[in-house]
Amino acid sequence: MDSWDSLGFLLLILNYNVTIIGKIWLTLTILLRLLVIFFAAYPLYQDEQQRFICNTLQPGCANACYDMFTPISHFRFWLVQTASVLLPYILFCVYVFHSVARQLLKAPTSGHKISKKSSKGAAGSRIPCEANKMDIPDFSKAYIVQLLLRMLVEACFGSGHYYLFGFFVPRHITCRSVIPCPYNIDCYPSRSTEKTILMFFIWGLSGISFLLSLIDLTFAFRSSIVRNHRNKLLMEGLGAEGRYSPVQHQGDMSTLEEEAKTL
Image (cartoon, rainbow, N blue to C red; front, side, top):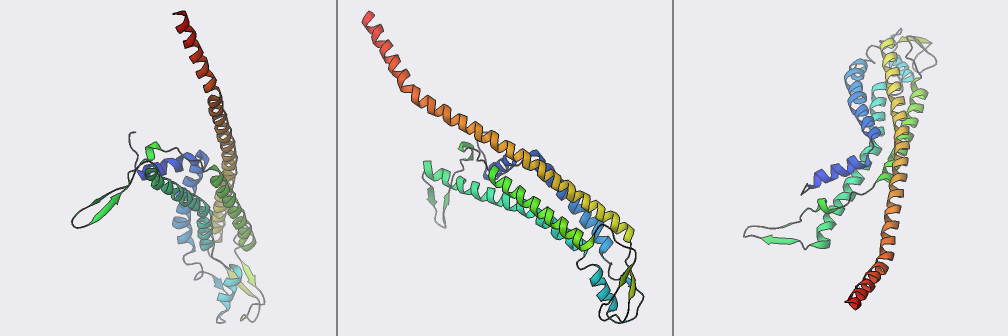
């Protein structure tokens, strides 16, 4: 590894600061959660309003009952939930890339002067990459913050999901005292059993995501404590070496003087 390109160094730092549980969570969220939402929930809820049947011909009554039944579509709610849960992780990646990119730009200027070459048509400057000479920074605190935010977002959306939809999609609802309906109206959602099964599946994925985030938080705290303890021991070792090196040097000089006298 004589040379590192900037992108490879950024990916190395991101891989170093994300735990194995975090990688599993990201794989679960992208490959399973998003795929289920787009390939299972979207076809299921694509025609939900057209198949919401009410026993009335009053204009606008079916739309008012449907709005009372589901203030927001399950599909759109799950999509916003997944995007919001991924947002803290994306912000963490942006923060890591920004911080490391600034270090990569500052590294050449500290030891070398930026070489500028001008030609007849254009002039440019090139900054040599010295990623192979840099230490890998620790972003464990930022990672813990994004884990806390992710768990908070997951918990808030889980509570909102229960408040808006509950656990089941009913096969029959009664629309009472809703303008412009003149009397109580019976309505029938489409494919309620299939939607209930999918809702439980999304609930399970959200629970697994929250549990993995909690385990990841434990791993991140432990890794942060181990790294801080290791850095503390390293600094104490360097300080002790600095204190004892002059004494050792003086002892070596006195030994040389005694050997010179004996000769």
